[in-house]
Figure 1 (tube, one colour):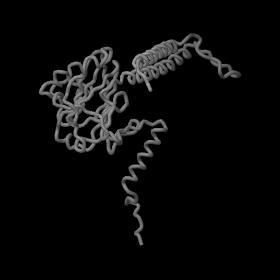
Figure 2 (figure 1 turned 135 degrees about the horizontal axis):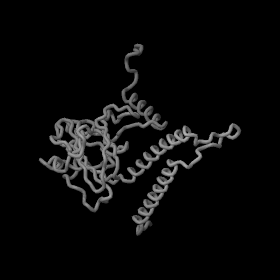
Figure 3 (figure 1 turned 45 degrees about the horizontal axis):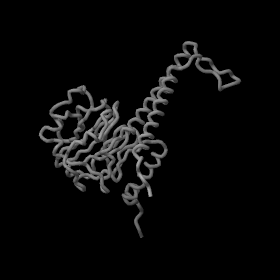
Figure 4 (figure 1 turned 90 degrees about the horizontal axis):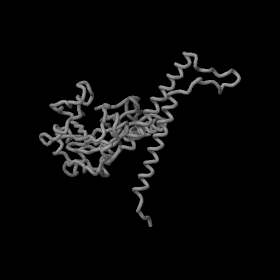
Length: 295
């Protein structure tokens, strides 16, 4: 006869528990929660060493000077080489790659405020909404057109020089992920000694590409949200100044400001600009596909 199962002892296999937790998190994600994970992508160098080509800058013809390039690199250390899972890198809240020991990669980004975050996974799981299992870096910095930026990750040693363009209190001047100058990245062959973080079946990633369109979409949504807040404040101000007509009791759909809202004008202008941007994307895609024959 089997002994009774203790309330304090596990009664199911750990893999079953993990699958149940994963299903629960996916359901939460489907309900509107932000579920951070790198399941199937987080394998570390201990299990899968980086085998790409030696460091080289991308060709000048491979990116538009209206945009910018971010290089991410991680120098070699025994600690990183023994890592089972590699940390994830996010730009504007989208996961792009997990950076393994002695590796580099790059992203072409749109100018403006870009948010960079790094999270350390546990069996691929990283966090939910504002909660993170291990948040390594969380920073926003201004990206200028035509420029190249170098982001150095090392959990054992910090750069000996702070980036001269950043405030000393900026998150990218402290911690494991820091923005460094080109001169610093090149000295002692720090970045030159790294190898390309290629994408394969064991460790797929979405780096070494342009993410300009994704950045533009994020910027548009961010600006719309700010203008909606501005609109609410403008309505409150007009109401306090007696420039807002209340709806009559018999017709709840009436009422409103007695003058056009400045926020509405800005929203309309932004929507027109975004529509032109989408039209330009369609034209560019049509031009790129022109000349292709499908049989």
